[in-house]
Length: 162
Image (cartoon, rainbow, N blue to C red; front, side, top):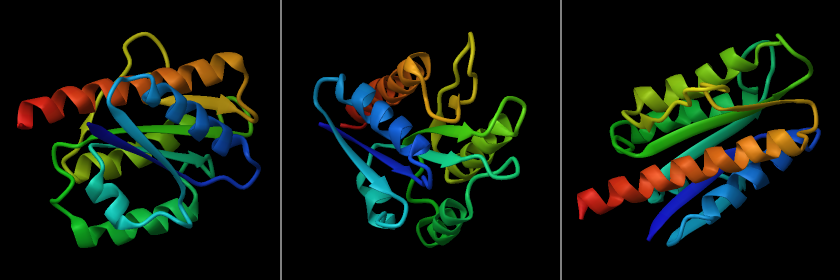
């Protein structure tokens, strides 16, 4: 059984809605356990215990929120222990061209520095799921797809390690 953890920050509830949709998509993959944690209750052990880690944040000045960044900064204590795990990211922003892509990349940079595997998307939303304000049906669908893609890859990689 593979395990996915979705760690997110949300102040308006928009990113939380996305986190729940990401989790719903990951749960579609048979044999996958999914845990959703607000960053304020997340622990480094959650990341160590997971096969896949999906981060979510509102877009703040083209970057992840300070609370998520602070959590990521503490992950230097487990540096080298996340290598080979699967990662993904999602964000909500206040409008178009407001820094969503750079926010996604800021989260993906952290995952890549940990040695994690990140799967892009070839046709649209290349770096992860993004929504403007509250996610609509299409945004939720993209979030579910992100969760499912990460869970499928994490499950496949887990099988090769056994």
